[in-house]
Length: 75
Image (cartoon, rainbow, N blue to C red; front, side, top):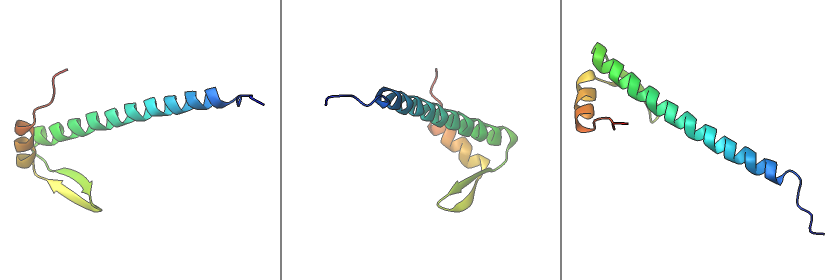
C-alpha cells in the first residue's frame, strides 16, 4: 500500500508553526534584554544577569562601554 499518513501534513504544519513561534519568542527576548540594558544605563543601576549558574551584576559603566563598542543595529 502506498497510502500517506493523514496527519503528516498537519504534523508538518505544526512543526513550522512551532518554529515560527520559537523564532518570535527569541526575538522578543532579545528586545527585552536590550531594553533592560538601556534601562540600567539610563538609571545608572547594575544589570542583574544569570550566567553559568550564578547571579552576576554588570555595572552601568561596563554596560555603557559595551553599548558604545556595539551600537544597536538601525532598522
